[in-house]
Length: 211
Length: 211
Image (spheres, rainbow over the protein chains, first blue to last red):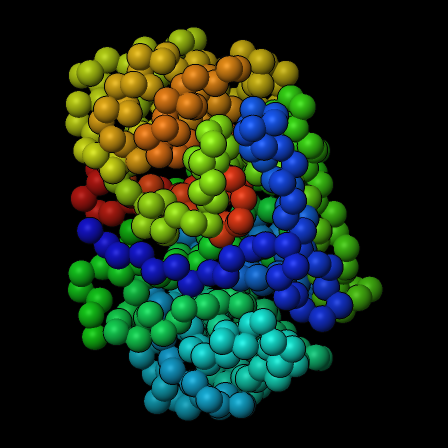
């Protein structure tokens, strides 16, 4: 049996969001004891918690996240340990093994600051040269356990999006992937007619994945 | 490479919801042209579109959908063709091959009525005897391309939930699974502190799945 590792943050009212974004609200609107069934109402932007940025987020593209075929959100994934690096400068030898159509997860360890102000103010940034390197590799997705690969004006986002590379932000639990040479990354977004989507991100580990 | 088949409905403003439920709203709140980035705001209950019912929905359980381990939402799946049946009476020989911990998808074909009033008023119902049969089989999930396995007072829901069986509703595209003897069902909900969750449901087909 394959093993599944959850890489997603819990979604709840009052969770930290990107500065200026609308707060997340998750409110119980019916209970089994009173109404005979439970239900909740969720109000959220597309960029709260663990989510996937689609091409429409930072480009003139009109492609909604629901327009992309489902196979786009599953591929071989590889973890790269960049813990402690304030600016991430990728070297060719760190990414030479990435096949076209694969996913790269940057393990920064910065998710441990999620509940602190620093999380959204002092996260590690990926250099523009690194973004070009990954764009040339034709990877399909990049993800990180931090809020974003860059700061305004978001040139790294734009370099990646121009090549249709999807960006997964606010991952967590990436340390759990360190024993595995490769895995299957499953990042199926809700089928929303929106630019991007909250997502449950899962690594699927087959028996042959051990490093 | 495995093949992935999407079994989920598109989520958009004004989509049909269960009678009495809050409407779904998905509104663009920022555009790349004007604000320099796109974003949308989603307001939804847990039971609109393709979603998974957790134990808290129709029982006194306090387990939130975010409390369940991720491995709970992936297992071997099997399709059963019940197209045209107004009441579904399962026989032992139709389900004898289901191992404990597996998922059964009921292919009713009723999803073709999604945009009509009949969809939420005249959907096929699973008999209580069938629910007991599946509960005894210790399946993990049941899904259907219709709004619900039963009508108020939802005894089928309660029989299944008492055994921690998750219920996936409003699936679509199940005809695409008919060539496959088995598949891996992936139904990872958002990690919401809620009773249930909207979900992108995907069948993962490995090379050995052909009937």
